[in-house]
Image (cartoon, rainbow, N blue to C red; front, side):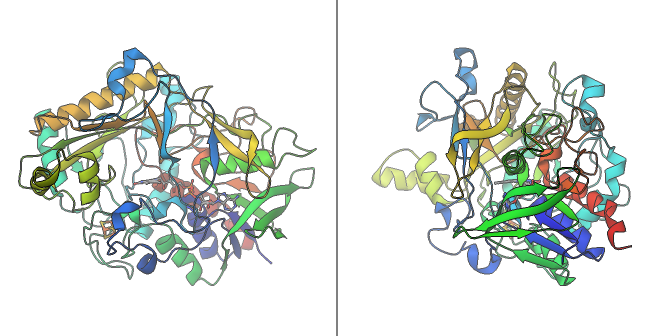
Amino acid sequence: MYDVIIVGSGAGGSAAAYGLTQAGHKVLLLEAGPRFNPATDYPLTNSDWELSLFPEKKGSQGKYTFAPMQKLEARWQHLRSKNSLNGYLSPGDSRIPSGIGYHHVRGIGGSTLHFTGESHRLHQQSMKMHSLFGVAADWPLTYHNLMPYYNQAEKLIGVAGITNISGRDYNGSSLLPPHPFSDTSRILQRGAEKLGMHWQANNRAALSQAYDGRPACNYCHNCNRGCPRGDKGSADVTFIRQAELTGKLQIKTRLSVLKLENDGNSKISGVLCADSSGQRFSFSAPIVILACGALETPRLLLNSADANSLEGLANESGQVGKNFMETLSWTSTGLSNDSVQTFKGLPADGICWDFNAPDSVPHIIGGCRFSSTTAEADLSGPVNYARRLVKGWGAEFKDTMRQQFGHAITVGAIGESLPNDRSFIALDATAKDEHGLPLARINSYLPETELRRLEFMAKRCNSILHAAGMTEVIESYGSYDFFSSTHVFGTCRMGNDSNTSVTNSYGQSHRWNNLYICDASIFPSSGGGESPSLTIEALALRMANSLKHLVE
Ligand SMILES: Cc1cc2nc3c(=O)[nH]c(=O)nc-3n(C[C@H](O)[C@H](O)[C@H](O)COP(=O)(O)OP(=O)(O)OC[C@H]3O[C@@H](n4cnc5c(N)ncnc54)[C@H](O)[C@@H]3O)c2cc1C
Ligand code: SF4
């Protein structure tokens, strides 16, 4: 029998599995997606490597729907995505989802298989957005409560980087040396410094030296397509690998949890799942942990409504699915005249934190950061150059291609996403999955404050390119007209007050004593552009530590 059942094996579920198995607990991990093998599933040496953003396997993408999206307005026309070859990129007069919309992977390791691997700690003030700035909600714990778990997660993954980052205390950390700057970052540093901005090494879950039986990074520039060497600190090769070594972890793949059952009082009594053929199974354990991500965790709770919880399980506060925060992002691309090869090097290796504090963007609450994003803009290979950047036909085209390939430089910004009443996850009234359960429906709205922050981010990105010597922005892409989210949060917010939050600071449901949540849905605020996985992992390790007493 198991001590704990964990549902979902992404950043949160994997770190919880690690913490609990290290403490001697027997853990059953239920994962809807398949297992990927880095050596065989990430074929970067095949001729068609550029055609997919991340290799798909059967069952590795979830389904969801969108409510009708925001109308676009003439006054924000300058925030529409455009390309100098193809013009405006979004047709029509409404915001639309980009190709994928919610970028994620279902599989052992979850979305960390696809992630870039930026490993950020939150700015301390970002955890007190309500008491300091009157927006969002405060975290029910402090940065210093989380600090030992940040240290533990960084050490386990093998984060390479620096500790002199404003707004953070790195006492007790042990990072690997930072990576050398790529061509992209060297040029962006030149531009940023001309504007008086500080350009630093970004903290990255990519090994700068051999570590933990894994090789150092070879700077192939393709972290988002899956790292074939296994040096990127995705959850499968770090937390899961270590948890499996204890012999205490049993993993079941391609098994979707459909519903949680309860005893009508204060306990979750069972977990109902189904495999892809529809066959159903039930499991039970003293503790149940949800880590399905900020879309699927609220969906599972809402789909678990019954006579004891009419509005959805653990939804006594009415906050399940509410406070949805998405990725507010912008990228600007230029062509450098320098002799460079920007298709290689570590992605997102340089960053500017100057505007990350919640009050550092002039006249707008909520911070942002700027980083090198040529790889995330998917300008690592010739196909995208040809489609998006190169004019002409025949001999002229070939000449331009030879001259331009390797010269694209993209700078990106990610900003705070504050909760608002019109951004939430609900159950779709008609669309259902293969098991007959309602899909999650994304309701997304960007209010004026978000658009003004986005405007600041866009202007700064363009200024950095210009200061770095690029005369023309040849492509810009942002959240105003495209919903394109890699970071999603907030839909089961944690807090001290059971009337306004779903869990306490350990992710424990205020009502159901043996139910915990440890994914990005418990974030009360998003941070000023920090990437979330390290914080999710630190929260999961803290939660696992609080459950140590189970076997003592
Ligand atoms: C392209 C891209 C780049 C990114 N870059 C970065 C970065 O550089 N740094 C960073 O920190 N973050 C980055 N992120 C975001 C990061 O990957 C996610 O924030 C993080 O993985 C979220 O962790 P999670 O545990 O909340 O959910 P996930 O990692 O998404 O894991 C959820 C898991 O739960 C499983 N699941 C869902 N429903 C069920 C169910 N009913 N039954 C069983 N299993 C279920 C899913 O299959 C999935 O495996 C990036 C993401 C993408 C897509
Ligand atoms: S750049 Fe480094 S970490 Fe990223 S996929 Fe290539 S080898 Fe792996």
